[in-house]
Image (cartoon, rainbow, N blue to C red; front, side, top):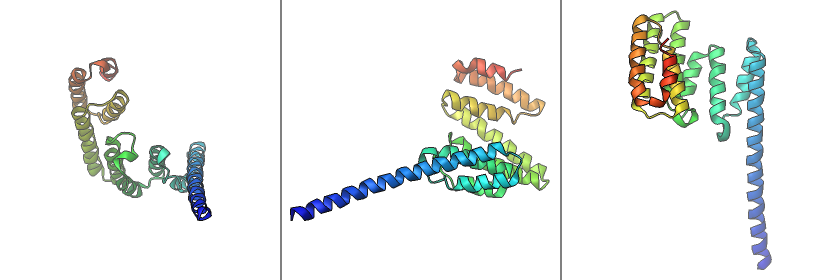
Length: 195
């Protein structure tokens, strides 16, 4: 009887150790695949076949939660570079907010793929409507949330990239003054955008 109980504990223990080892190996494989995809893409930024290969490799890293945000960012960059805008918007739709460094990035990336798809078809009016919506969404996000320093700076920098006309510049200056009250410790950062 004791041997049977001992054998059961031994089998359960070995299966736990084995499953932990497999999970650890999977994590190592994911990280190696991610590094290989990143290196291939960065070393060959104009080689379509290398970028396609990098995209295929990065897909095998999507299951690793520990590096998922970095994998998502790389896959989005690859899809953008390869001009796969429809595939990119579907990919972003399939993700959770937690798959992004910051929550606003999901909508921003999705809408950017949509805008670029319109642009690739020569529909600049629809593209501009999407970009206007992206700017409005970012402004709303910045104003309605209490953002940490890095997220605030990144979101505001992305918002400022949408400001192309003189009226946009006036709106930006007005927003800067408003944000100085909300984020007094960011005054020096915000003043950079006033010039």
